[in-house]
Length: 253
Image 1 (cartoon, rainbow, N blue to C red):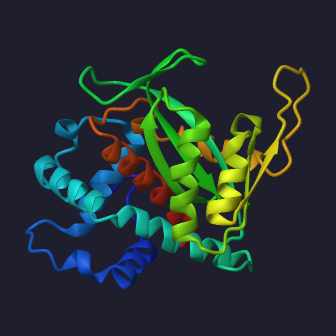
Image 2 (cartoon, rainbow, N blue to C red):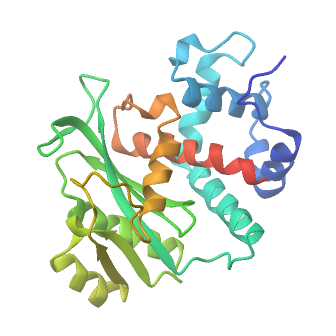
């Protein structure tokens, strides 16, 4: 009997077709079972040593997980799944608009890289996220929580445009306004449109063009491993977030 997070046959076939190289690694363990173990851990938030015994040994799972993060496997998988999802909606596989925002996450480790977000009183890291007009994740950049949104958006915009050269418009809240608008226009030829939020009012009103990124953050909050940062380094914090993105994007296969 499997788990709710296990890959379906169609999802397995998709991964095997798009990434045959990951199956060339010599290992006694089933690669799909290792992936199932990683997805189980991210969804439930359990510790590595507490993975159920019917998965491969936790050290084997962890070694493959770190290898996949370092080689950008989850990043590439998310990108391929984004193409599939957009194609199903009869849209061009390459987006022209991206919506950006950030989220501060409390640290769960005393020795991890972290900073203090003075506005939200959170000690930890910050996830800078770019999504398309559907809310499908394009890329993620992680930083210390004390990094201002406008500073983190520079690296986020560069990475998003490198992956998707067709992007010509970024939408964000007013926290990104200022010199960033001109810098992105001059260096990347990308327009930054800052939309004022209705924060502080009693009326709920979805913000035109921006609400999709908030929904994506809500999707990510369903993965317990992401509710606190249990990663020591920023690149592994980015990797686990991308793995979660790939996990919920697999529903389009």
